[in-house]
Image 1 (cartoon, rainbow, N blue to C red):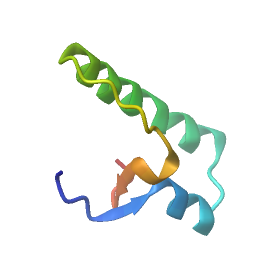
Image 2 (image 1 turned 120 degrees about the vertical axis):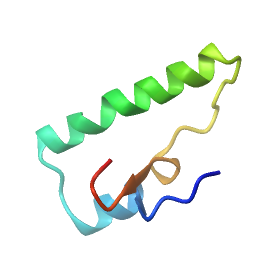
Image 3 (image 1 turned 135 degrees about the vertical axis):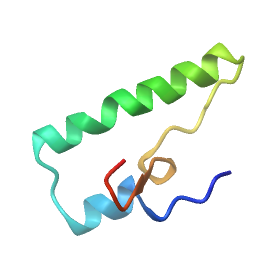
Image 4 (image 1 turned 45 degrees about the horizontal axis):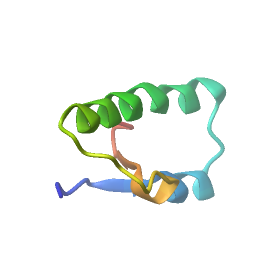
Length: 59
């Protein structure tokens, strides 16, 4: 797995409250990543905040 210099979503939510705009900005990249995995025959069965990594730029 690639190193991500940042935090997971659970850690982020423990340190700050996201605005609706910030929260919604997380959804499209997660959906794109899951679609890519599905396109390659991979089913991710453990989607949870701890598995969503956010780098220092918010990506």
